[in-house]
Figure (cartoon, one colour):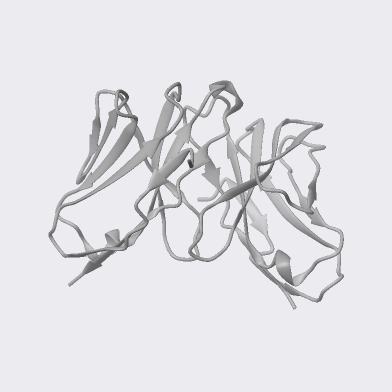
Length: 113
Length: 112
């Protein structure tokens, strides 16, 4: 049973459209993360949050933005989608210090045409 | 140098074989370590944490060597269902941030 939910699971959208990828968790975790992963490639951290009103950019530069208005919700937004944004986006959360690892959502596979 | 390095493989082994993966990490002050499993087009899932004393979970054994800064995963009696990519994951300092660093993964293909 998933405790972290991502929607949509798949999204095909035209260039220039604004999109928001949703991520919600029911575990009360303070820390949440967004990763980007191309097929067969490694995970890259693009955004993270340590709690409400806290957001930071990750190691990989991304044109996306995030917000954290509620503990359980960490949406990612692309103001103007481009084909280079085509990828899988994975959301994760953790209880705190990293000693227990992350729980990942099932991901959103984005295709920009 | 990458913070976490793994041999990408693929490792092609027959059913029943024993296979070992190694992973090296660059920050000697790293505090916690994990192995994750990722199936094709799925999210990573925690396989096991890795402790200094080594730990075992059924057919899987994880070892940590702090002096040499490497982590290993041993899979005994491989099953077809073990075919996946195995990600080595490290929690570098400052450890209270909870930011984990993922290796690129080692692909295992178990064949009948």
